[in-house]
Length: 489
Ligand SMILES: [Fe+2]
Ligand SMILES: [Fe+2]
Image (cartoon, rainbow, N blue to C red; front, side, top):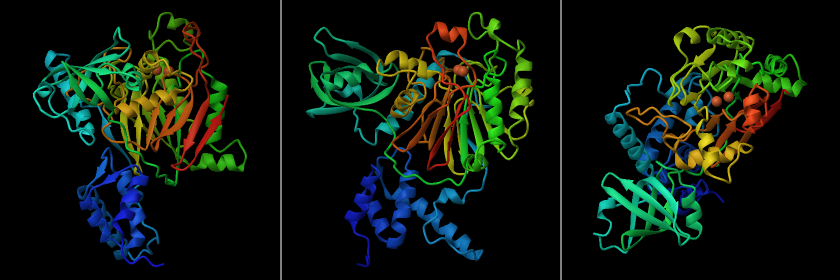
């Protein structure tokens, strides 16, 4: 049967498959499209939806414009167009764009005003994301409105268990505080809440308490679309150059593999496909990071550690661009967001190394990679009993769910009170890449590829005492379609 026009129900169903609701205005716009273009446009709209849970005409029109202008360009160049719709991002040039990075933008001095501005920014950004699914009233108005059910958005101040076995969550917005009572299944959710995260709650007022029937996280929308990027990205981290536990043999095998010197034909083809290497921090082992570290160093001078790092990265093929972000072992400020390496260290590296801060959102040929070293994973594993260092991506899921890279303020991950909260995950990335805890793991969460890279350091004495068991020498390569796990140990 030939479909002559596009049925509204068909459009609604297609969006539902991606996990989105669609506004009637958007349906009307899409009904005017040629049926052959519908799937491609919907896929692209959902890919770029970035947190919207209801797709409106405003989400669609700019994408249709971009597609039209690309088509015109192609036509004018007399290039034969592809029969299927080309996603807009694939028409980008092969550049790396740093979309978000604190480097050069830090302006905090640690004053009271800075802290107020920081928490306001966190609240504003996260509550904006929640407003798609929660219709809040100010907390100070709860009790004054006649509605039976109320919805609020607030920052979590405190969570504790009551004598009667429920959870009590103290929630705050700019207008006041309220106690939220969560029982049954919701109690389990509430007991995993972290201080300073922003959530939505709906419930019924009883006395001065809000009895919750729903707790809403900012979360990322469902996106099941995968597309082959046409190149591979190798994800690694925690090289710890300068440590006496650096596993040089394994690193050299990785270098040889990426230079297509070892492995069978299939493996060499995979190596050849790698256009980018992303390193998520702890490039060097640093100095004075933990008590007694000096006994575990092969290179005791920080400058020489970076010289060694530059020398080792120089062995990677020059066709590969290296995106390098720092971690807590690097010689930059410890509070997150961290800027990129200092000029005196960064200048030691070759031109194919791109220095970014931690975190950094980079756009690699239309693919958004969010790099975060991962210090807050320590906080999550400590706070939520079901999480563990052995399954790092389960903890990473919690970051996406909370749309924040370090949801809990003032624990093991120090945060600088910048006027803008750079740790909020404003844009939904294609990849979230972290390291720090030295255990390897990959998975997908709502279409986002999660990778916690392992490390190039065997278990140190400090880690042995802390009962941390690293899984070193593993690299993953992802091309948007399939993940390859490569072991060099
Ligand atoms: Fe590390
Ligand atoms: Fe680290």
